[in-house]
Length: 148
View 1 (cartoon, helix red, strand yellow):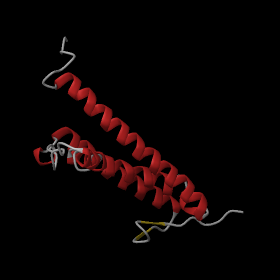
View 2 (tube, helix red, strand yellow; view 1 turned 90 degrees about the vertical axis):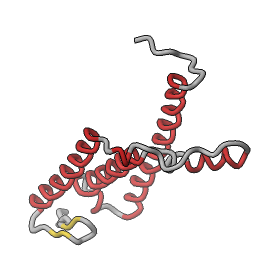
View 3 (cartoon, rainbow, N blue to C red; view 1 turned 180 degrees about the horizontal axis):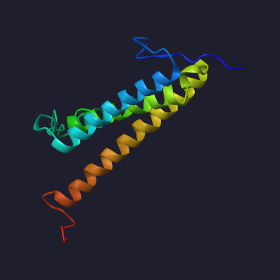
């Protein structure tokens, strides 16, 4: 019942001789991504701290455009970088460490697409609610004043 695990990562571009080497290689890759996230989180470069566009104002179509574009265009690029790097780390953890690569195609799709839709939904809700809370505390007509 035992079978050989596939010993390559990055779609076959990097191959290892043993399963132990592959584990260390994936661990080094995940550590590198984590270090990039930590450095970006500490230094927060100014180039990544400003949104690409301002929201549209007025009318029904402006509202629809804001809803469609809000998860990507109105977000700070630093947040988008963190989200993409986190998804890459989750992919490699599931694909290599949990041996999802060795499962059947339909099972892989069922697991991956369910997670993708749930993560996208969670990101949308958190970003929308975070913007609302920010406006409540920091808007022109803020309902709540800082008292701490």
